[in-house]
Structures are given as structure tokens and as C-alpha cells.
Image (cartoon, rainbow, N blue to C red; front, side, top):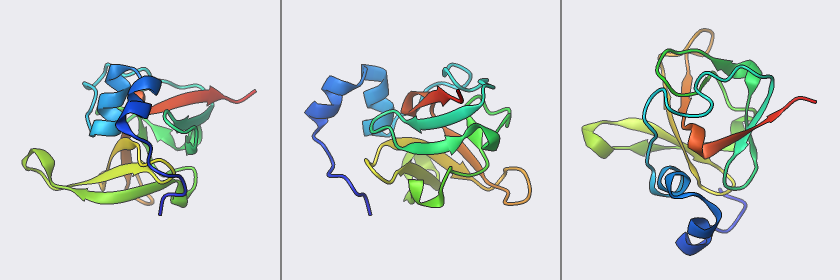
Length: 132
């Protein structure tokens, strides 16, 4: 369960750009190969754009060829929650931040061994902080 109260749409509209709001709060997506982090290779952490919660480590990032940042696992299992997404005539597993419910992307079962997971995440829903 989320540890923080869900804030109002007005709160998020004031805090986020229109594109960030669409992805994070309206379950939108950015176009493939357009996001800031799809080809990003620096070492560090990827945090939730909305609340700053650590979500993914650069060591778990890999090039899946899909055009979005892809990770084999979250930084900690409890950092994200999953739920069924039946939008757009498909059945997928949506991933969102456990702390603030921000939409991050989806998780698929076509990732690399050993777990076979690909967390396909929108760049607009995360921000990077490098190792210093």
C-alpha cells in the first residue's frame, strides 16, 4: 500500500510539465526513442519524478532495443507496485511508484535471464542522479 496520500490533480499539474503530468498522472506514454534516458549509460539511480523515491539502479539497466529505458528489476522490490492494465485492447502489467502512485510504464516477461523481466519505463516518469 502507498505510504503517502495521493495528491490532487491540481497539485501535480503545478509540479509537473504537461508531458510529465500526462505520463505520470494520466497513464500516458512517451514515443519510443524520444525520452531522455532510453540510451543513457551513466552510473547512478533513477528516482520517481514525482516523489523522489529510488526506483531503479543503473546496474539493472539494459538495452532492450524497444526505445524506452529498460531494467531487469527495481532497486528494491517494494519500490514499485504492479496492476493489470487492459487499455488499448491489450492485457499488460502496469508498474507504478508504490509511494505516490505515479505511472512508470509496464513490465514484460521478455527480459534477460535469470529473471526474464523487462521493466519498460518512461523517461518522463523518472529522473537520474549520478554516483558521486
